Picture 1 (cartoon, one colour):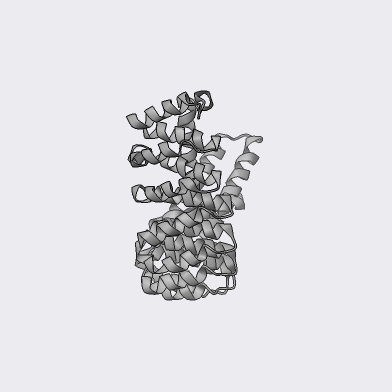
Picture 2 (picture 1 turned 120 degrees about the vertical axis):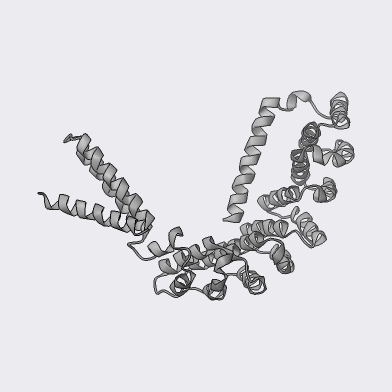
Length: 353
């Protein structure tokens, strides 16, 4: 019998034994290997065999890396989450990949892993950026005890690496209202030199949400950010706050920048019927000098859809403030709404990661 085939059988047996012992990933890999074997036996063709073997070797190699026969291995996967003590020890491992994977696993465990919080905070000074980023994210996932997690994340906002600051703000946002003590520092961080940090801070402020007046004031001020992405993010976050933010959005109708005015009008329109309290302000703003803003106002009124709003759109067309031909069709409107939802979902994913 071919020695390679014998070795192959022994590997399958070892995986099955591990599976019987409760190590599920190995059992899964064993089943996959068996299926590859069956395929090879069925497709007993000299031309097909090399392709099958190539796929098998590549797939197996990928699983080997994933399951941890390299530094940062199997014990850090979901099936070993319960062993928090082991992961805490691994945070001090000599290999940075091990430290990163340990922090990642602790973050997935969440609140039950709060025994690791002090060690994760120490890890925020790790020399490796990837480890610091993962530790910050893990602290956001665990979230407790807040009295030590929040100050540590506030300090991480000013990390020399921009991505660490971005993740720190996102982590504070994930903690939400219990991170209220971070609001003053987050407002200060709106002066950060990098736009990605400022945008992530806006997300954190909205998620924390209180004190409401301070948060709304900060988001309103961010509408004037010199970076269009940050300004747009501020409008989006105000929209996410819902009806309590409507007066703040209306205040921005007088902003000197037409793009800011267009953004806040667009956000109000996407609220739909709940934004009906803003209809009088939208009608008053319908005399805006910018054709872009007037068009967005008409679209917002159509989306809100109250009789008063629709009548105002007719008046705008009658008085020549808009041309209905410039407005989009219902089908185009639906597509734009879907695109906007996807763009917001992508934005949310970037902030939460």
